[in-house]
Length: 129
Image 1 (tube, rainbow, N blue to C red):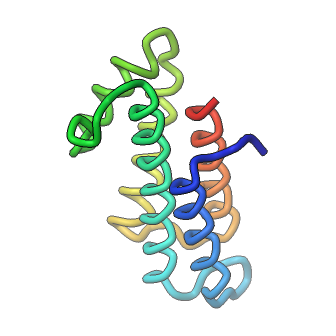
Image 2 (cartoon, rainbow, N blue to C red):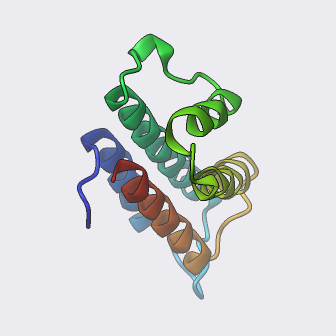
């Protein structure tokens, strides 16, 4: 595994720890609230990784994005200049982790949730390389 920023790694590990506490039945999480919390935490890990990378690019803490639209603009301007795939991956993670997982609480299948966490980790590793 590539080195991740300490903050992004902390958030991602917190998300995994939350999921370990959720009761399972037939590959289904039986409590939605902690799954939503884990998905929200994994999304924050993604944002922390982007913030860390933007700070390394020379932005100040005050210049960091404050909204999802600002994150899109920052990705386009600083990190995805020649790589549109990065922005598409961010959009997928936004929809999966933040909207479906956290906001709407639609994710409860163990495989889907674990795949979402793996996707977040892969994105973080990619953005930090």
